[in-house]
Length: 327
Image (cartoon, rainbow, N blue to C red):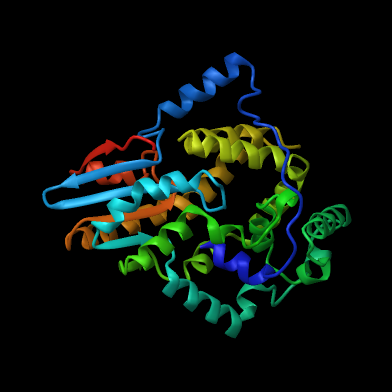
């Protein structure tokens, strides 16, 4: 649900040069890499982006997606074209209807993204952090004054796109949008997995203090954003989104002043808000749709794996889960 939000806020801002980052996971010492992989592989369904789930007459194709543009998506879409042609619906995090409703809501109620009481960001942040934020936004073509009254969690989302190739329309050619376009061309019904305003429900779970901390830590990592972007895309196309999540935890531990207890707390907070709670709510939606015939469900790849991932939840509900070979 971040995609329509970022696109609306930053429509028509210029893109920058291509990223030239390095894969930080590949650069790990062999022993550290082995330990990281062992921790990752201990999680259920830790590797793979394409899966099949069946139970009785329920037939579900599950696709872990990467929300940004990449030419490698073309092969995936081509391989899934026959599957979509035989499906009764495509389920996504946010379909055209949900995105239209969200766009309308934000146009009518922009205060949902803004600080409406208390200190503004230049007052709440340290002078050093405000200057760092101003520089990071300027590098993305965004005037810093636009951020003064914006809730920190929205700025954290914006800064998740690296400055090196910042393009708020990049998600328009992400795998989700490509599948939506294909489904539309096939006149296949498209259904959202969750209410259109879920983004606000999620972000409202973070206290102002937590939002400030998240923003400050994002700024701490700003200098390595090119590398993290490269590491993420490489991990996704290798079917290893969970590996990137585990690696991100290690990166968090390296931040100035970060303790393991604090990293554990923050990662649990984010994981519960962005993944676990949503995964559990998606299961009945997926099952109800599957009762009407074969379906395709496409959503961020991190939602697939782990004890509380969609695949494990379906398996616990009696589904047979098999991996689909990568095209």
